[in-house]
Image 1: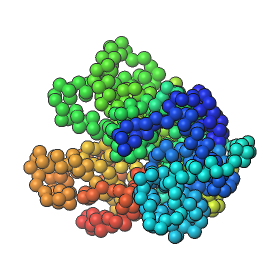
Image 2: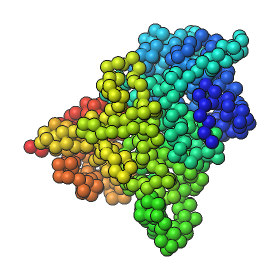
Image 3: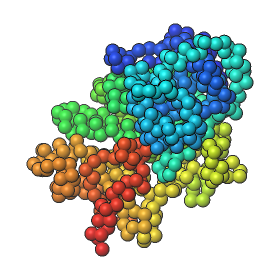
Image 4: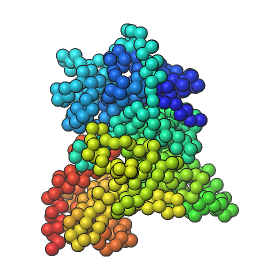
Length: 604
């Protein structure tokens, strides 16, 4: 049952209710085991944090920041800060020094918490450019401090500060004064163009978001949640707060590269994710179907066909499948499909919220065919995550992003732009009045930048308006549509469409090297390097053939006419991806300007 309390009291009230039950667990890499944290221990850490923040003189609504990968300590800081009415600002663990400097100075951060050696080293390099910074607190006790560093202390040292004074009265008063209009967070957007903006999120926005999500999601204290996305991301942040308010148990995944291992160790019932996760699962199963023993290939294909047809034609529409189909699915579900779920670590699956990008119909159908209740949704940082999502008690149509949550208003503006108004919508951007006025009109409608429409109570998105390309022939191209189609191909890892003010559509493509290299080995394709492989005529033809098939249903002017294969993946480290793995088009276009010009120069 949802606890709708203000976040200044939430963890302590949950501890009174659940006491020594496990609230969360994390992998201790020193001993290679998952260690539990009870609700009572969680509450104690939050209380220690609140008192230590008071000992540091943290003021009401003062900004403090965390610069860390997912760790339990991030939640200790969040809820400890809420207890003293401070504002927390999370930085992505992979943020560059320049990004950290911008956010530190924009928010005038005095107190910064860092996770591991990487984050500590980054702040040490740029600390002189952050004039307001006074104290750095390090979560990981194995971090080696720089010689002469007098600004940093370890978390254990920091928590002891609260023991050196009587802060009970002040803490009690701050909790009593806490109100829904208090700022809870400032979340800096990914910044695909220019400097990022700090989105203001209040406690009232979170409380309303928890209420509307609780109304449509079957979440309870029985659920085990694996944290997949960074807590910095509004999706994972709001979702984790909802899970804590429901009494569910969190399993905090520290390192993204351990995700597959964590799935098989934790066996979560729920997990929020982006579509890319399910695309990878889809490709892995397709690969098994293509390369496994013939009997297994036949059984998997038959099971997924039955499961997909059952969901698409019947259960998604609230209809009962024919008896024969029910029998077939029951047999597959307790054999092949069960084995598939167990292999993934999802044999205890409840449901899986998914948002952040378009979900291919093929992937959506596949996940449901595997007996996994994926809930496609739509949301933004500015809307405290959820705007809409699939509901179990309503018809679900492939291609939609579900139904609007309760009491959120919607209308469509120029170019069918989605406009939103309600209690979960941000009041604006931190210290950016001009940008706020541009995004939120005089009537309080937030302009999302996404185009869409409603049909039979479901929301459909068509394109990101600012990303629409106009060819030199005057035709409008939605690059996400093409890129989503291409992402389903086993030979393609990622793709960036080029079209704006060009004669035709072209693309920069990163091959799925593991698959392409395997093809080369099996077909006698000789190459000296990945760059050499990307230039090989046979490899180019294989991918060209796949592209032709994938874009068969596109209009002539939307089809990719030329492409170039890139020998290395896009990455955050090279500045080509945001921290949420979205491509920074401008950066990619600049880096590969020569290759782009060559594609158009070759076609007169």
